[in-house]
Image (cartoon, rainbow, N blue to C red; front, side, top):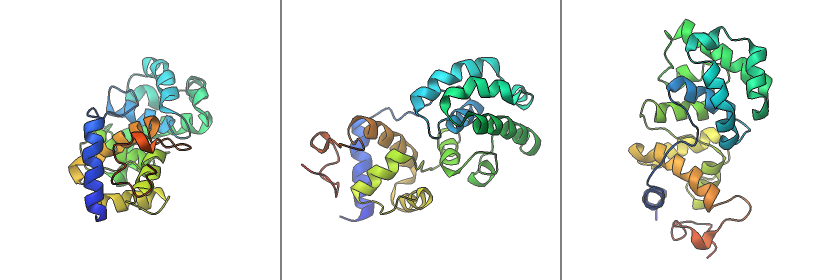
Length: 209
């Protein structure tokens, strides 16, 4: 079985197991999703979802964030960790979106990664979930699971992203990443993967069943 064949098989198995491939972060518009994703760095999505309601209720528009007091934003996002850096990035990314991109969240990887605090993982999430473009969000679950499957042989997020883009069906890549997050939490857990309960065990190079 080639890597591309294994990738297609993995996609189909996870699609049946998790038909609703939704982002775990709660957001009602592209700006909120961008902010929530920035907050999720070194933090769980569950924690971010506890923090963002108060933040999104107080700051509702791009201009609100552009004019925000960074100290106030810090207090609202404190429990997400690295809160000073994240608060500064949130305000500065809003200002750059307004000054450089006409108030619209950018629609290319290059433009998105020019925003403060936005790396390729965040940029790919926006490209996939907002602009419906083929995207690979190389988070810890995707990196671990695709290495175990034998689809990649690297822990470097950018290399994982670029290698998977070569073998995943483009129209399935974004949803596959969301499904890997769900699968990584429920079955292929980091310390003790439940290979006997995994729908991909027959195509996984590391399965112990």
